[in-house]
Length: 187
Image (cartoon, rainbow, N blue to C red):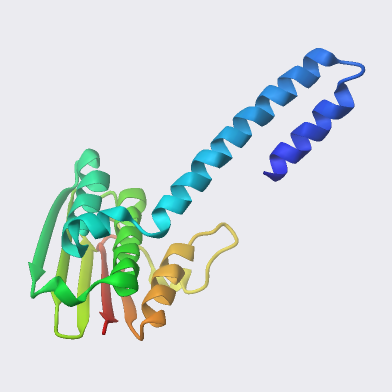
């Protein structure tokens, strides 16, 4: 939106002396606003994914992994054990968001052809394992988010789990894949 304001100011300044330049700047601003609105709508819809309400946590995880990994040629294995009945509401949303970030990281960074997700529903907690056999990375290099934004997703995963008294552990090393272990209690 800041870019739109700057472009509008450019158009305003150019209007008296260069109407063609102003018209191009206004068209660019319109395009930027359109893109911003699409992103805002998507963010609003993503606050509480309707797929959780429609399908439940396990099926929502399966849907998300299939949608984002299979088109990349990644074979996805999903294992589910236990009864997910108690894993609802904000805890289920947090778990889904954590898995969503882990799957997105596989798609963006791992260069793998195999991913495994397991959900173990226990009486008062959910254990999640998301792993791949891709290129891996050094987790110590991302303990604190970088100025570039690298590591923010991992930090967000940890913060979501901690809000519920849970944990996220990341095991990885270059050339050896990545394993994300999550434990989130629920009431």
